Every structure is written in C-alpha cells, then in structure tokens.
Image 1: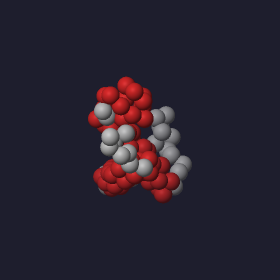
Image 2: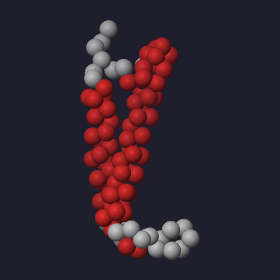
Image 3: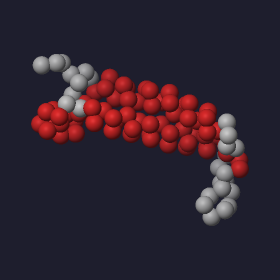
Image 4: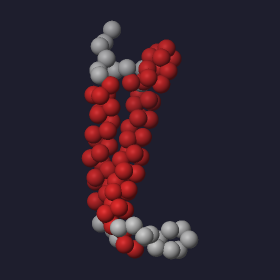
Length: 93
C-alpha cells in the first residue's frame, strides 16, 4: 500500500496553484475594470476603497479556483478508496 502524504502537503497541492491563478485572474480582470466605477445591481456605487475591492476579488477568485481543484481531485480519486472512506478517500494519494 502506498504511503499517504501529510494533509498539509495535499492541501498545498491545491491551494498554491489556486493562489497563483487567483493573482493572474486579478491582473486580467482589473486591467479592464476600474474598481472605482463598480456599482451594485440596484445602480448605486460601491462604497469600498479600491484596495478593499481588489482584496475581496482576490479571495473570491482564490476560493473559486481552489474549489475547482478540489472537485478535480475528487473526480480523479480512486473509486475503491472513495467507496471505502467517503470524501476523504479521494485525497488518499
């Protein structure tokens, strides 16, 4: 049986690339969008500083890309491990 990697290492294999891609998304989006010109759906302007918008957007991007990584890992998991252990079985390797 193959030894399992520590949970920290398994988490970082998803979180680190997601962090890098969130940075890329941040640059792409905000090269075309001015955070000072953003409005709510009702039409009133956002009353957040540009730094707050950049920060919130970065964490949203990071979370979405990390969620995609977790879903990909779940879909790539060994079916026998998943059937035996449930969700955590997908992260066995």
